Amino acid sequence: MGLDRSWDDLFADARFHWKEPDPAVVAFAERWRDLGVGLIHDLGCGAGRHMAFLQLEGFEVIGSDVAPRGLAACGAQLAAAELPAPLVRADIVASPFADEVFDATIATNVLNHGSRAELQRAIDEVQRTLRPGGEVLLTALTTWDWRHGSGEETEADSFVLADGPEAGILHHFFDERDLREWLSRFQVIDLERVRGELTRSTASEGEPVFRDAWQVLARG
Image 1: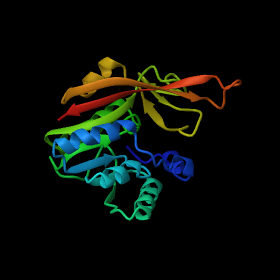
Image 2: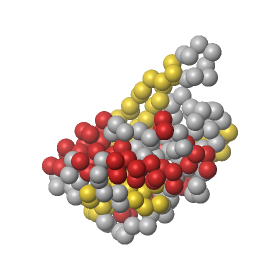
Image 3: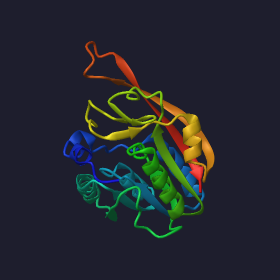
Image 4: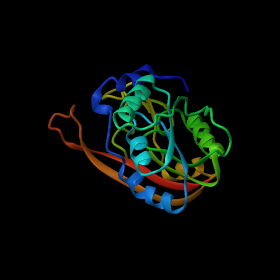
């Protein structure tokens, strides 16, 4: 999957240099500490909010992202915190890492961006690079998300968005059957829907809309 320049351009806007870790990453860090997890892959690390948090929690973390501006923002955030910055530019469908190298992988707000076939290749790469019994924590958009059906449909449940900061970027939305098929090489440990209310700025009265995502913990 090639670099979508509009995706890289997103990181030119400091609003997307998020610093607070996802609550799920905070919650599962304690689990992974108890399990003796050492090396974590932050897949699609963006501006580095999870790399900073996990390193401060005592984990070794390697980050990868396809967007140069994302990696630059991540490096700057880690430097400001005086933390190591082991960063690799890489596409989610072609991981440069060896087989069975990571104890765990996180991928939040990442494994939506691509065709269904590309996302299958991406999750297969996650499985390949996890050690036996390693875990992945991921989020993926559901078909209940407010953006489902918006923009140009390229295949079933896949749309190139026409509006908003992610306009021009391909998104795939999973129903539960599709999600479980996608994760068929994993043992799903925990699965839940997480719904968050947003305000759509383009709406005439700013009516609320809902980001709707699957949150998954699975074992390879």
